[in-house]
Image 1: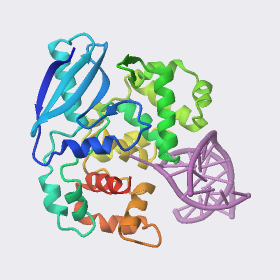
Image 2 (image 1 turned 120 degrees about the horizontal axis):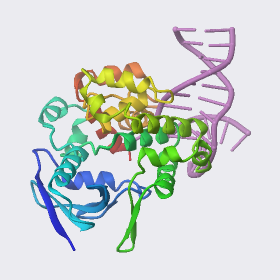
Image 3 (image 1 turned 30 degrees about the horizontal axis):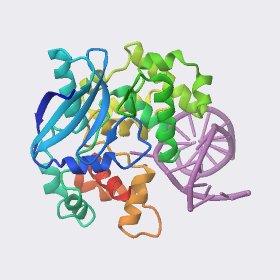
Length: 299
DNA sequence: CCCCAGGTTAACG
DNA sequence: CGTTAACATGGG
């Protein structure tokens, strides 16, 4: 079975292969599988998991196929389409960014090399927060392992054509687990506590993506997130970048960004925060995209 | 053994 | 105010 669920038109400056290459960067990723043509992942439809495959059969078009699961109702299909548009930032006009940075000596070559790459997002707020929290301080490979353990222990999954696909757990599922249980997966006490705090807020309706997006400006969302113990500026901006779709989110203290700039500029030390602030001054409003392209050059 | 990883906090002076 | 240790684990 492979029913066409829906098709989405792709904007200018969108490159499906570049997005797939980015997603293929870690073999430890447990929430989707990429191949030459597309990506396959489990998503929640009406409530039941659906195995969805995305391919681009022709330039300018993205097709969503249903590989497994009950064909969803019309409004669930609309929800999935919104999720996909969010995932790949399809509603953004990227041309101003390319005009702004196209001739820059640092970014220019990256825009050419990865032309049409979008910030691959994490539309679900809980998943985005957890991923950022897991990524605090530790190396990326270890963060992927922690995420995989959480998905395998607490998320629904489906075995299909020899591969197991996971949904990231709902907040309620991690709340049902004790802090001790999460620590047994090798999360630090702090990570376990912060993840459960966030799970409780979201499950209790005290924190949501909609509410953060409804705030008057991105700084207000950052302030709301950093008011939660265990969430600092880096995490809040990372979530702004990958979930709230704030193209101006700037994780200026990010060590990966520091290493990327150091490497690309052939520096003998990492750049300081003031130096990065100065460097990014001309890309105001597009800091998240500048950061994402610099990350891409590093990994 | 030390330092560094897509940081944050609490406890210093 | 600014600085520092602790956190869990793995790799260089």
